[in-house]
Image (tube, rainbow, N blue to C red; front, side, top):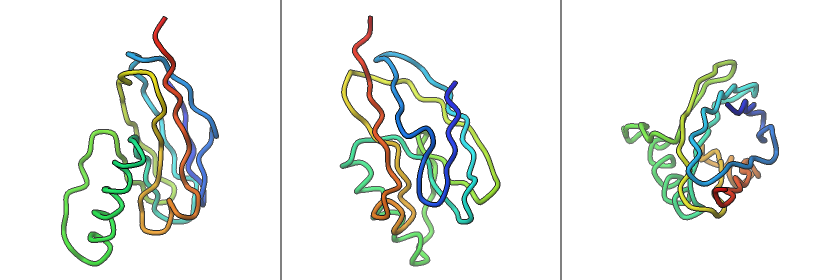
Length: 114
């Protein structure tokens, strides 16, 4: 289990390391003053998701049900379970409009198994 705290506009811990093939339960708390998102993916996946989030902000209805993503209001908490594939680097990021650009992203280092 890895506990993650979201603030305005950061994540703690600042560095996350896991092993390829490992399943991790993230316990996430939004300690910030605005809505934040915890999303796991590649930079390209986050770019596509930010476009979807912008449409939601413009009033278009869309489901927000990605299994590696959790949208939390201030003071709320939740969980995301994720099984990491191959070694490399992913990101945890907030794709609420403007948050990623404000620096709300952190690398997740996926080490080779063994």
